[in-house]
Length: 146
Image 1 (spheres, rainbow, N blue to C red):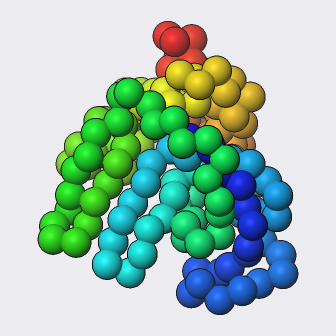
Image 2 (image 1 turned 135 degrees about the horizontal axis):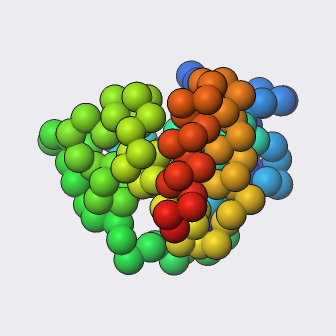
Image 3 (image 1 turned 120 degrees about the vertical axis):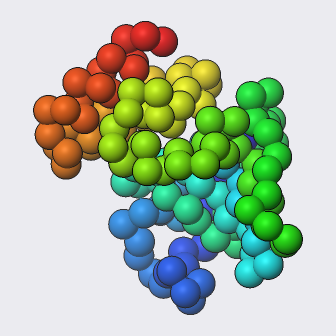
């Protein structure tokens, strides 16, 4: 699934002219869809190399193909998550931030599945710069295993 940025908003959904996270006209791959009572959001790799959650009103859908590996889960009444199975498991975010190889690999999987190697490499480089050798070794192993 791909989306195109048609409007920039801040974290409070107020219009802004510039954003370090997305650019007008930019096309991004959706990594998960999150629906809450407050609205729908897309998780995507925008202009920063680590996936971010964006308000859906910032985008129009360019292609609507949903990967066959996605499942629907819920955090409770009114909350729906459509994402890869691994991302829906309890503790995933903590395992990812601890750079467990399986968690890092599951983040890169949708990018690699779509042959988005450049985006996966961008995440690898960001992990390496910001979190050091341990993260870069694990991310490299995850990419090599694919």
